[in-house]
Length: 609
Image (cartoon, one colour):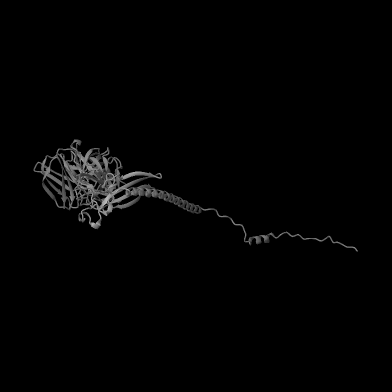
């Protein structure tokens, strides 16, 4: 049997359908996407978050270090305080006291101690206390106010956040509970600290020293919340030296007898047997005073119109040429012209003087002058109440007196001219020059005496003042005096300097309140044997600038001076004797006084109502 195998079977190969495959691929959810980069905002936010995290870690670490350090220091401080308390408990009642203290003993009042590498200051205070159960002070039923002793141990150290304290207080009663009077003779010494308003001052430092007692007393303590430091059992003796102060405050104290101060006030305190001696001392925050000294001179501002450097941009229709200011261009003059000077602001201005001009006004033309002052970026006309006629302007004459313009109210002025041609074809009016005089100061170095009003006694030389110093300003005429107590201070210059004080801003005496800073300007003039400085104020104590002061002496002297920026008028070259003073100012009643004695450098105050 034959078999046939057909080997001719064929296979048809077809190319794949790429379009269908592509469509299927596009429908697949796993298609590839393009990645987005990191933006600046992402970077900033991420950095901020990292910064917050790291700052938090750093703060937590710092806090942990502080806690560990403070706990170590606190434990050491408690140990030192307990050590001192245990030592006190080991003493007999009579031996409990501090070296130089009241009551006396062998315990140091203050000592530096180092423990575990940490420096401490350990203060110990031992005081008698008056038990209210049997009455206090003079009301004590048995007259014994030293009922028991109180010991306070204060251990101080400095941490990263400031000073820290551990304070332990303990009460020690006499044996068998019986009250034991202090070793006679003795009394009570009470120190009160108050401020300038007589209010109690807590935390004031009080130093009590008496080398005449046995043992000698030397105590440094602080006032309590009531502003009091009281010492029961103080040995009866004289010569208790008291000094009271506080950081940033003035100092008040008692004074001993010296060759210059034979009658001190207050003198050192005396404690009498069974009596209470009280001393009250006023202290307050210190202040400062800036002093400026000037040589007063007459100066001037002027413009001869060589160029436009002294006129301002608001000037219009003005031509500056040939040393004159005139209409711009040629006839006809159809528009008025406005000429403004630059702002005139003298340094250390004392008083305005005279506004002068030199002009040419042809027929049928005119020039009117006014005075302005700068305000808020613009210019304002000085009112007629201050400078009469200013609103209408000044067109006749060649000058105008500006001494009545208060220099304190108007420290800067602007000169103005209004040019008009009634006939447009007339020759142009012109200004060849205008000027303004004034009194101002040039800083100079000079010695001066500054004295307060507070008195601490008297002696062969007269009254002894608490503050009385010879000082000198620097080459610019300036000096700032710090750490001054509140007081009323008077400044003067010696005849040997060759100067008199011709004006003082503010008027003297300068009242300095606690915790303030004030300034005073002294304008100096050539010294004369006799002079009179008059300051003029209103009923509220405010100085009046631009007022008028007239001083006469029979028929031999008659002078009138306008008060300067300081509200003062100075008269020099006088003969000694009695003078009449008359003062006036717009809106006030005229003041008159006779018999004003002028001998040497004399000051006189006037109050206008």
